[in-house]
Length: 166
Image (cartoon, rainbow, N blue to C red):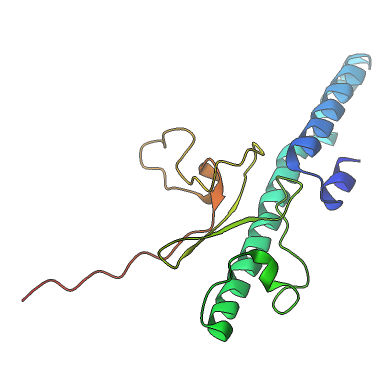
C-alpha cells in the first residue's frame, strides 16, 4: 500500500507514516510467533522505509534534472529563463516536475541576478524557501550532500574565478 501511495504521487511523510505503521504491526505480530521464527521477521522486512526513501530521493533528483535541462533549453530558445515552471509545459516537459516529498510540483524561483533556484522541500515536507544550509552541523571531514539541507536545492555552478591583476 505504501508503494502505491508513492507511485500515486502522495508526499513522503504520508508514505513514511504508512510504512511506520506497517513495520510496528509486523513487530507486534512477530512477538506472538514462536521464538525461533522471530529473527525471520526481521529478515523479511529489513528496511522498507530506507528503500522507499532512497527511491523517493532518486525520483525527485531525476525530476530536478529534467527540470534543470528544460530550464536551460528554454533559456537557449527564448533568451531568458521563465518566470514560472508552467512555461516549460508542454514545449520542454510533458508535465510539471513532481516533488516526491510534497503533493506539489518542485519549487522554482527566478532570482534577481538572472539565476534560478529549483528545489524540493525535502524529507520533512516543510518548504524552507530553498534553504540549502544543513539542518545539523556536518561531521568533520564529511562532504555536503544535496539532501543535507533544510530543502534539497539544485546546485549552481561556482562563479568563474576573476583573473588576478598583473
